[in-house]
Image (cartoon, rainbow, N blue to C red; front, side, top):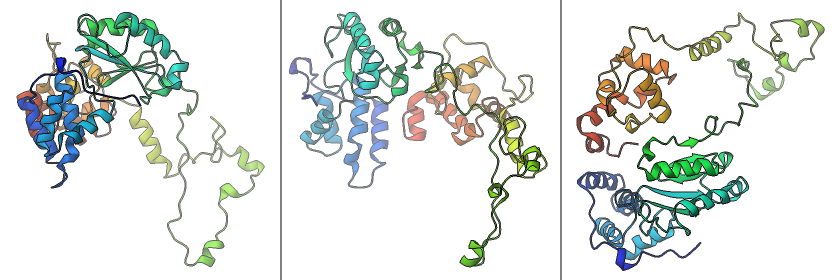
Length: 370
């Protein structure tokens, strides 16, 4: 590991203070730890300081040390050990972290670094002329299947070509980074195979296993239990019996009238149907406002789900905050969420965000949204 030191005094600010919103968040975070263990909050507080100012300053280290009653050197040790903490100013609009570990290197990471050198700066951690962009090479970021990839702030951009990375950098430099789609930049779902599934493509559910409801009375009885039908040699009649073999794929299947097959069929049917867009329980949509609310701040809503909500006319926190039970069930079924909307309490989250934004969310939930 390279030696990590604080930035020169010439760029260090003289003071640091959390914003009022972050002070409330920090106080709540510290209270999560048992009495006498509050120093365990040092990493989340350092991360919040970095998110607020863009990097971890000496003043921030000393301020957090005072908050947690820690010697300055202890907090400095944490900040200099973990490479997730930036110890000098980085790009205000994007700090591009290029994965250089073996899978990414084999798939073109060196070409991505050449793009960064050409479009940002010749050396890692150096700022571009405007101070808006910087880059570095990092170790594995856990998206090896989707190599090569980069991370910008908290989002990863995967399956990249040099040309795609150039476009992404240009959009961040133009201030349009929030609208760049994270994740794979090719036609694949998360880390699914390129070109579509190559296994587990059979839509028929696996046969349910019968379990004896009556336990053996003794070890001797357990040994003497006769083998199941599956263990017996098959006869010609078995091979042609539709109750034993499915004509669709030749695999053992439950008879159609078997009671164990009914819940399986019901589950498959429920998963394959969506409620109608004309259903009276569908929440009322609105025309897209000039500035839609950032629905991704609601836990459980990512870019893809936000896009689907927009398609059905849901753009604001107020809309979600007013959903009744029938409306929640309609959306839950439309998204095939299986009760997730109520489990994650979208309505309560939306009410807090509609009332007072992130500050109210922190007050209600004790943490920053997302």
